[in-house]
Length: 165
Image (cartoon, rainbow, N blue to C red; front, side):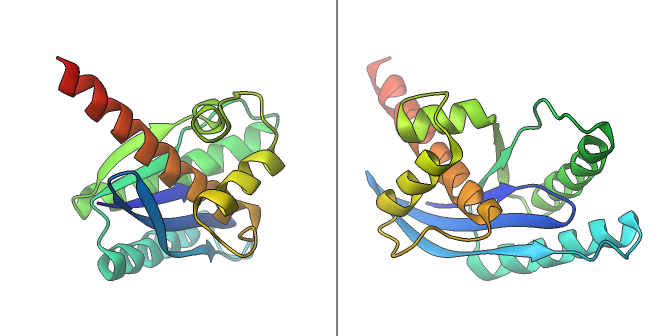
């Protein structure tokens, strides 16, 4: 099973693809999509969609984990991030990739067993669980891989729950 994790944004979209086999997770690829603040939002959203389509066609994930929007201090930022998330969801749906959403709290809980873990703790767990030599940068990339790992964990838990029924 290949899972694509995505941390939505307008300027930077983090992404990471992991392969899951049983209880083992292996990183396939990761990176980020960057857009210029000088472009109109519509062009930035198109660029995100096109780049994401290329990533999906190259790595062929079966499922995707996309961060849910949560409390934002900056109202202007939350609107553009929501629009970027919408473009991402539409792209995934158009390419028949099953989507699940997770809040930062759910990701922290899945990776550290503590919902109030700080960003550095989550990043260290991403590095350890995927046996990486360094924490992926920028932070959006580590967040995307954390989302993919969270989804893998949720799938395993669901499988265990369903086998007991």
